[in-house]
Image (cartoon, rainbow, N blue to C red; front, side, top):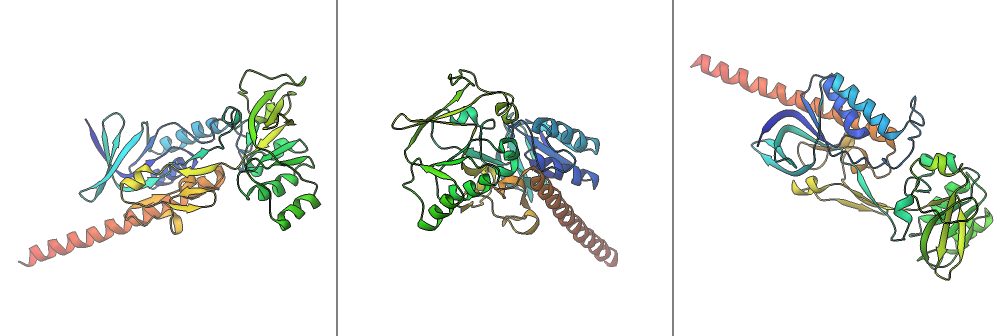
Length: 339
């Protein structure tokens, strides 16, 4: 059993966590990043809308980010944070190895988990030909046959965005009976057709229409260019061939530690998240959150920026605390001198 103490403890080594670590280390803060190594975008082939690094592999980006943070003195450990509590004015976080780390401030950059619809075959294609964000992967499927698996009325919003990228968009109503008159009229007017019937499964098929047994590994860039696609199987046996299938997962912030500290999660139509004020400050004193943990829609670039701003706020908060402590020390010394 070991214990180490730091200025700031960051849980999560994704874009938000590493950006925060770099910012804090550049201000000479003693910062530790605890990262379980489970980035949300690991299945994806590339990250987009990232200035100067457009199309970079997400894991390559994290490798570079770790090196940058460490070059300024940040420490990064491959561990899982399993518990959190307040202890003597500090935060004590227990690790899977049995060690404990403590810090004056805590930044939760833990990301989220995508809860996909319960459709056989969907998870295996996630991050390759099954996608959710038109900004993250839309360009790669432009002009292709795109299916939208409707699980909530928000599917209309997805359809409108993907229709900008292709004139071959089909909404699979799945468990929905349909949309309201206004939404239905919009879809019909822009040429998006709707197909009723529950989706029973998704299969990968080759150019000849044969079912493939292997799961794609290279991601959607190769998936839409090598002649393979998806067969969406409906309840009545109908098979609809598409090049890509968009879904709307329920997004759940990884927030066990936040709840252990007494925090309460907030709900919105897309899922559950840690609600924060400006610059990522949570209602819990000394706790910040950044990235997908508090912004379910944040892309890599947004998450990284949020991590930087949260780090700046934490650094300022620590500086103010140090100044108050210095004043108290000086006052105490003065009182002792007078006596």
